[in-house]
Image (tube, rainbow, N blue to C red):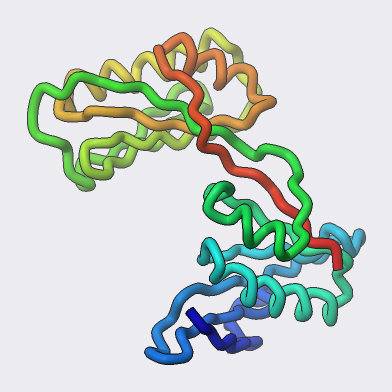
Length: 212
């Protein structure tokens, strides 16, 4: 598929350097985009980050255009995070992007559903001692997003995770799987997920860098 790119420099957000749009040259349909953020860091290698909304071959022309803009702005590297690593691998190799650290890995727990799948309106938050889980539902899958203000304790986080699972099983029995993600160095969260029966998957988010 042939694509053309369009650069929008006035995105209406002070931290947004530009937005690059890709269009199918035949249908003119939007096929992807990349938002470039200027973080204002003193280190030019850390100043510009990209938020791509594209994958596979569509990533190449977008990131090349984004790299040129980042270079103009004084950046020496363009960084972004992808969760579609396998799909993007040929494009990443073509671009010459360098694999960096794992940002987080997804964990999964399979449940035996005992009712209709909960809908999106069933979303809830559970909080305990400065730590929380936001729970959203997608077609019978519960997706957990964790945040906490302080390090806390492994025991406290294990109790919160167990409470989330208890609420899920009691109030949303139609849930057939639960997904959660954790940074590799978050020992407390990894231990809590493991204790609750979750298993790590091959799905992960990884930072890539394109030297400029």
